[in-house]
Image (cartoon, rainbow, N blue to C red; front, side, top):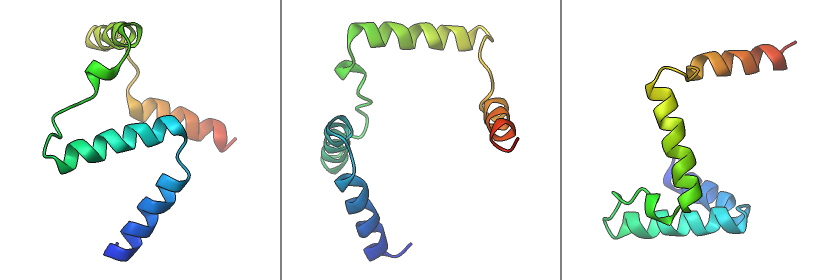
Length: 81
């Protein structure tokens, strides 16, 4: 994709972002441009969301997850029915 097309695409996505997406994008871009791309946003999450994500990670580590390819395959099967 050429530079101008990339800029247009980014502007379009930003113009259509809701307030939460816009705030997230601002933080990501600002951190990236400052060279602080290591910030993964964990500290910005609520305690409740951190707990839910930690529990989900533990479940996946315990083998209780479903591989993405299976989920995507199921979705494609249901859509194409």
